[in-house]
Amino acid sequence: MNGGGWRGFVRANEDEQPTISRMLLQRVWGYARPYRSGIIVVLITIFIGTLLDRITPLLVRHLIDVAIPERNLGRLNLVAVGLVAIPLIGGLLDILQRRHSSLVGEGIIFDLRRALYSHMQRMSLRFFTSTKSGELVSRLNNDVVGSQRAVTGTLITLITNVITVSITLFIMLTIEWRLTLLALLVLPLFMLPARRVGRIVRNLTRSQMQANGEMNGLMGETLNVSGALLVKIFGRRNDEVAKFSQHAGEVRDLGIRTALVMRSFFVMVGLVSAVGVTSVYWFGGYLAITSDNFSTGDIIALALYLPGLYGAISTLVNTRVELASSLVSFERVFEILDLPLEIVDAEQPQILQTIRGEVQFEHVWFRYQADEINSLSSRDGQETTVISPITTREWALSDIDFTAKPGQLVALVGPSGAGKTSLTYLLPRLYDPSRGRVLIDGIDVRELELDSLGQAIGMVTQETFLFHESLRANLRYAKPDATDAELEAACRAANIHDLIASLPNGYDTVVGERGYRFSGGEKQRIAIARVILKNPRILVLDEATSALDSRSEALIQAALQPLLKDRTSIVIAHRLSTILAADLILVVDQGRVLERGTHSELLAQAGLYAQLYQTQFKEREQALEQRA
Ligand SMILES: Nc1ncnc2c1ncn2[C@@H]1O[C@H](COP(=O)(O)OP(=O)(O)OP(=O)(O)O)[C@@H](O)[C@H]1O
Image (cartoon, rainbow, N blue to C red):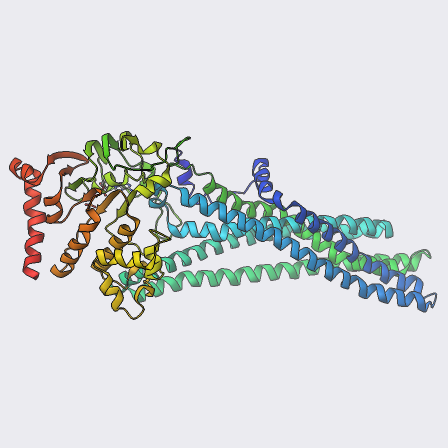
């Protein structure tokens, strides 16, 4: 597995000069190619528009040199018509160009976003445990938009300015080459500062992006239910506001500095171009006074061309750098698209049709990869914090070997961190084992089509996740075509129907973010109803550790009956009723199965199970009895 890709999540050295590689450009072109007809329209309109623009000074020259001296009213009218027609046609061309450039730009955004999102969706769980969700959202938003800007912004600016400079210089040289060369003499005067200012602005922009990222990160972490709850229960509201003000203040200061630098630069360019224009007037005037064959119209036309020429050249000076910086966004998007998919379908996957439901772990070893821990980034998202592994043991699971016959209940018990959750993750291929095999009906799960594997297995995790949508939509997530009657039947079986029916909006009640409007026990029952609807052949259940009151506990136990019935179930057990009902109990510690058997067999061994039974299961049961 390529570890570098993960580390790529942490931004490379900010001061590194971006380089434009041929391969990168080819790849970028790959995204632009489908829009080539639009790009051609854009290029043609830019060319005609720029050409038209350059005609205006020639018309003015004609007015001064021909129409007025000849007192020719017809020509005067023609010039006037031309002076109005040019901006009119130019405007229409501009609209056409904008239309096509936005079609191209938005199209590229769409393609990149879809490719990125679908790639992220296919990434393994490992990817999500090692990445900050804010970072992913930022790539989907900022970097995709940045990539689009590289194509429709910087590239178009580059092309427009190259065309402008070429046409303008050509016309100016044909009008009067000496004056043109004179006007070009001032170029170094603003090319040098333009480069410098370009660098300053680029650094400021980077700092702005960074400051914005930090501000967004803070908002993301403290403006969701869990974060807000944490802030409140620790009474840290003022500190968070202060921290936010600090970040927002940085964004403000950088904004002001950027505005000032940009304005000073424009003032300077204005001054230098005034020097250039003055030199044309002065030397042109001198030539007009000292020699006869020099026209006033020529001088004025040249002077009119100059600001456009200077503007285009100063922009071009920075365009290469800008293009390189905006290509960084493409690189950041490609970085994710290039992350290898770990959990993928086999070349010719088998589709599970009728499933008996036998589950077998065959000498399974599993370990989490080191970079999964190392690439976690710190809260402000900027520097990499190497978080040392919580566990020092090499293998999360060692030599796990057991079989659950169709319809059997296998209970996993063991101390916290023993590896129970990790074991269950291998069945639906959230991770693949490092050694050994996991089989369903005798077929290695890696040979099974992922979609059909997903359909065969239902999972109820400890933490219930519900989407911020109606209960109906949340339940249908398990079975999109479920009828209302089916929804109700599942909820009745899970002992949650009466509660839902008593809500003013019933099944249309919108669940708050992460299900916060329901109690822990209620959420679990909703999750159970959801899996009952899915009706999987194999069930993985992580029973909640928190002891509920006896009524909720009774409701959940009753809800679990129809869920466990007739299915092969692997249950991380915390309830006495579950271990008593289990066909096989595996006692896991330090990633190994230390003891196995039924409740009575294990009790008789008087080992770890007997201890756990006394400290965990019995205590929980007694606590419940006391509460009742
Ligand atoms: N994504 C991960 N990356 C690295 N190590 C992990 C990861 N998830 C779990 N671990 C480690 O693997 C070991 C087994 O964890 P697991 O969650 O399977 O234990 P568990 O028995 O389910 O514990 P609990 O009952 O507390 O939920 C732990 O030491 C844990 O720190």
